[in-house]
Structures are given as C-alpha cells and as structure tokens.
Length: 238
Image 1 (spheres, rainbow, N blue to C red):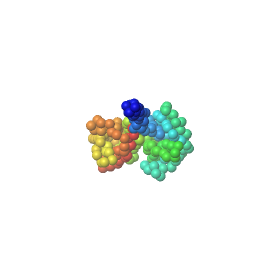
Image 2 (image 1 turned 135 degrees about the vertical axis):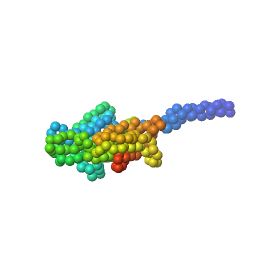
Image 3 (image 1 turned 60 degrees about the vertical axis):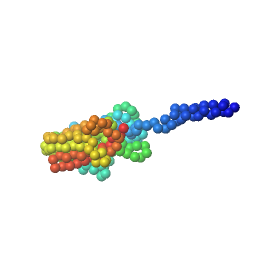
Image 4 (image 1 turned 90 degrees about the horizontal axis):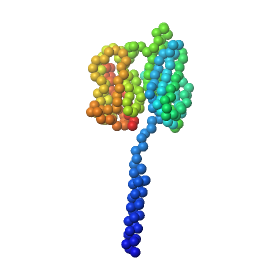
C-alpha cells in the first residue's frame, strides 16, 4: 500500500511540473513585444500651387487611436503651438493610410508643423516638426538655404529600427553628430567633417559604432555645426 501511495504521489508531482513548465510558468515569462500606437512612414509640409501649406502624412499601422491633429507655430516649440486642423479620425488599420490637410491663408514667414496622434485613453504623442517658408511674392516652396542652423527634424521618433535625422546649415560648416545613451556614454558617431550649406538627411540604423543593435530606450542626439550646438531626444522602441 505504501509503495502504491508513493508511486501515485510521484506521478502527481511529475504531472504538476509538466503543467507548470508547459502551460504556466514558461508562458508567464513570455516577452510580449510592445506595439506602437502608430508607425509613420512619412510626414511632410510643402507649399502648393495656391501658396497654401499642404501637410501630408502616411501611417504604416495604427492601433487604439482616436485620430490626428495638426499644430503650427512660428517658433520651434510645440508647447505653444496652435492646433489648426479638425480631428482626422484614425482607421486603426495595419495597412498604409495617407492623410492630407491644407492650411489656408497662412501669413508669410517660417512655420513649423507637428502631427499629434491621440489615443483612446486621452494620451497623445507629437511627431515632427517639419517646416516651410510661406512667401507672398510669387516665390514658393522650401528655401534651398535654411534660415536656421541645427536639427530640423527626427522622423520617425519613436522609431524601430531606423530613423532619419534632418539638419539645416545656413552656411558651410564643420559638422560633428553623435548619439549618446542616458548615462552620457558615446554610442555612435554619425557624421563628421565639412558639409555645404543647405539641408542634409542622415540615417541612424539603431546600431552602435561596434555594429551592435542598441536596446530600447532614450538616446541623446548632439549636433555641433560650426559655433552652433543643438540636441534632440530619440526614443528607440523594440
């Protein structure tokens, strides 16, 4: 009787271990990838044939979004930017979706635009800025020579696996662009050397100088162009 009891006890223990490892404990530690509310593939602002600002954006996927708003400001500061569009309802689709908004009657000058993606829970993220120069003298479009030196945009941001950094130079300058982690450690040197005046796009593929994939987190982009120094925050999400 004692031997039968021990045998049954051993079998029940083995079954319990199998249940935990096969269906319980292992699943409890499965890593569920983070799904971004929206993945953007483009965000642009240009002057159309009527001298109005045409803002367009394309999403690769959307999840749990209420919709989108466009903000505008004459300075590169989203906190004081004005919402200039109605709500563009989100499709919450996994396929490409393209949106367009026309900002009519904008005064002459340099204007920055941001895209706000608003989630169901009321939270939101801002993307951009992009900028255009509005002129009422018949000269339309983005100027070949930027009116400011520094980082113009980081898009997309947050990003995975790569992002494009756009910088503007009002004149030719020696450029040094580096990526640091939050500990202040140098992760990647993206660009160095002399660059001509104008706009330049530089891709960061999320790799360190040693070729290793960087982990999720916040990184600091530092740009030194001549005597000007600017920086921006990048967020890598995997």
